[in-house]
Amino acid sequence: MPYEFEEILETIKMTEIEHFDIRTVTMGISLRDCSDRNLEVTKQRIYEKIMRHGSRHVEMAREVERQFGISIANKRISITPVSIPFDRFKRDEFVEIAKILDKAAEEIGIDYLAGYSALVQKGMTIGERELIASIPFALSETKRICSSVNIGSTKAGINMDAINMMAQVIKDTAEKTKDKDSIGCAKLVVFCNAVEDNPFVAGAFHGISEPEVVLNVGISGPGVVLDAIKEAGMTDLTQLAEVIKKTIFKITRAGELIGRKVAEKHGIDFGIVDISLAPTPAEGDSIADILIAMGVEDVGAPGTTAALAMLNDSVKKAGLMASSAVGGMSGAFIPVSEDQGMIRAVQAGHLSIEKLEAMTAVCSVGLDMIAVPGDTPASTIAGIIADEAAIGMINDKTTAVRIIPAYGKKVGDTVDYGGLLGLAPIMPVSTLRSDNFVLRGGRIPAPMRSLTN
Image (cartoon, rainbow, N blue to C red; front, side, top):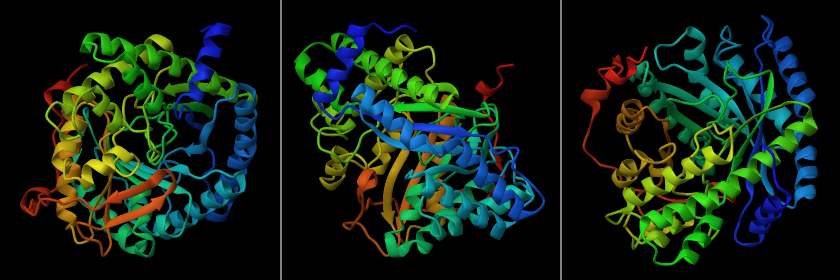
């Protein structure tokens, strides 16, 4: 799609308005040819391939930053879900693979490498069970590795056995990283309907239908959207939707331009632009503030879900018009700890997990960066994951849970990770039990809408 010079200049000016940046350029690398029966040979192949393709990733992204004057906040790498090419290995061997991935990420100079993952929506191989069992060890013994497990889909239904396993993995990860406020859980996502080309961590992985190497870009820009809404004043909602769409159109065009230029420097395929509005803990870079500017008193007020639905729909419509390569999750993220407005709403008692769950039915992803008391039972976490997966399965959309049962913490406490992970108030969780439901295990069958063949 051609770009007009004036259009590029207009978009670049948004960097001077409020927090506009490209949130991430993520290189996806296939590791499907790296497996060997010998673990040491496998590790060497993994390391060499990641370094061969990724060693100049940060340098090339910075060259594009300087060329266009638009900041790229994060340069990252995603890999084939580790359980797929390395299915023969056992728990401790998977941990060794995580360590070599961490070593490569450190040498490249990236903050996160994602794809320590498994896709088990319909069942599990022996290797996938071993990978899942290794997650608490891998996340506690590395700094940059992110993990995700897909436990459900509209086509397959919901694997409750996998959910129960993941609930315990989350608890174990919290305990193993308790000296850092259970930070391991901030790098672990449980998905329903995971997508193969998501550039955002912690849930990114390089899907099995993806090219050998590809460059995906995730845009941002909540601050730019916020300013546009404020400038529009008291227009009606139809007009406000148009304001949002025009703003997102420009952001998307800029994001795709930057992504294509980074891919061109690498000499690799450009994949997709994910048009998700991704907030940060910085003031003015908040989805919550956008909803307030739209007219609700605070996030959690009646009308919040409707406002979020309109925002998300406008983002998708504009992105599809601006680019022929829209992918990933594309919408509006509503993490708690990574959004200063969400943090304030929780601290004021305006926002509960139940209201957040309702909001996830109309936005991207799901319950994201939610901190709960450390003594929350695994069965309760399993119930929360199952509820969120059900929203995704029935609505044929991606949903996820990134929940932190912060070890030793209770309601009223906070965990502070700094940087993009931010600060999370400990949110109350219902004390009603769901053991007799989740511990039945088995699989919730796929819904009627799965029969689309």
